[in-house]
Image 1 (cartoon, rainbow, N blue to C red):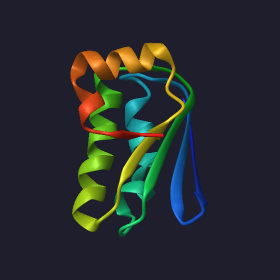
Image 2 (cartoon, one colour):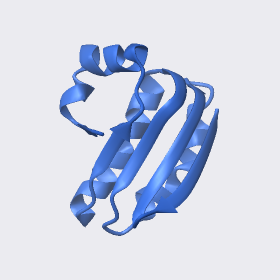
Image 3 (tube, rainbow, N blue to C red):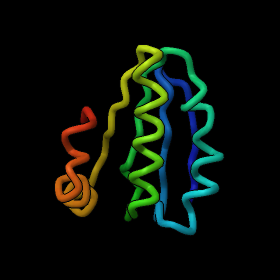
Length: 100
């Protein structure tokens, strides 16, 4: 699992690649700290290259959302494949996030 954070058009974009499972979640959380520390910037979680997400990964996405909202930021998810969309639908997370 690799996480690359870039600034694009005033937004923070996290490019997620690989499997965001229980084993990868602690390092991914460290890598995503800049997203949680950002002040009022919109955040895009680019899942184009993400092949799998576990409950640990969902918790991490929720942490990013909970840190951004009080600061006026929005969290968008882009590039989800059908498997990821099914996980988000089954867990109800589909209703928590905005998708591009």
